[in-house]
Image (tube, rainbow, N blue to C red):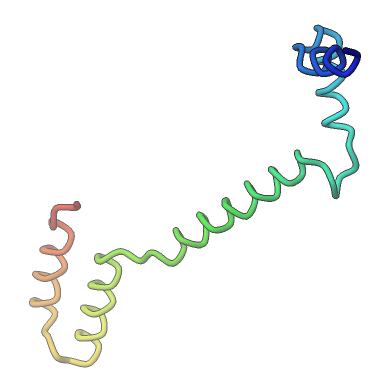
Length: 95
């Protein structure tokens, strides 16, 4: 009977003061073993991955501008053609 009573007491919702104590205990646990530090580490890694993805992503407009500059520099197209293509590139609808 004592075992059943002990199980019921542990399954009962914590009292108001106990809840605050459990939160403080959670936050005061040693850093390497703290669940909070693990969550923060996961968030930091995800943030780094998201930042890296944005940096690698190059737009079509940037690539097209580089190609146009290179063709003008090599003399493959004239300045007039360059200006026309550049204007078309700027007015291109973005998706």
